[in-house]
Length: 134
Picture (cartoon, one colour):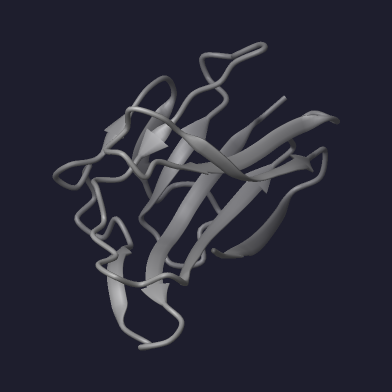
């Protein structure tokens, strides 16, 4: 079974001021400064699901079971903004029934994480855009 996930775009902006606080499209073809990742994450443009390659991709090979692997952005200073919009695009390629995808945010420099998005994915290929208003 071929499994891939692509993070195509990450945008963090404020709703009130309309100011873009952070943007990353992985266009350099390598990991941007400050990003951390574990497991099967890489930067590439070979998977057909990428609308605008390159992208950060989570590959199925080597195959993983019961895993939790992360891709972490550098800290984003949101200043005094109380309402922040987080958007990311991703593509899925045949994930198993009941697999989950999600987003956690740290407000204390990574010492603790708060889950803000968690949803089931699979088993069909699809592209989607997720937005979170917090």
